[in-house]
Image (cartoon, rainbow, N blue to C red; front, side, top):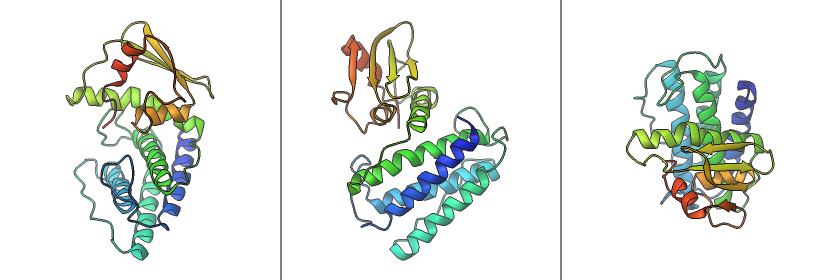
Length: 230
């Protein structure tokens, strides 16, 4: 995706997430352990500041202060973290920056922050019963990021083994496809880009009826076992 489209997507997803903060901040977030909506806002806003510091300060050691507990203060705090992030990332994507995985450029953070916000926006809306569809192109970029960044990082950090086989993923709404693992694919999963992304981030089980399996399901599931994401 073009950097301008990624930034536009990030801006939109931050705005939608911010709107969720008008709800009960004690709402549990189903797929984030024991987090509440407050904890999710604290995480996302803090990561906004961390990523901005990675660009402006050139390291990953920044520690964001906790988000305000008071709802009246939390919203403007989150809006400010979004402003700082967007202003920092509004530059040439080829600009050098500290990152936790190649490429070591601002473009990495433009993509990462957009996709992180996309998934957590879904988390917040899902918890509130108001989940809106994910833009297919952004969701597809998210699938690609899991396979080219998140899964390899899981392996290098010793959290997952290298995939024993190859699995093909097909987005039925965009016709995009990806292959993860060595050799010819032993199986294929087909679903919308949104559902593929939610599957890879463990928001959707691989047995969900929206996920269509073809080929050797057992071998294919061993590829997904990863875990592919943190």
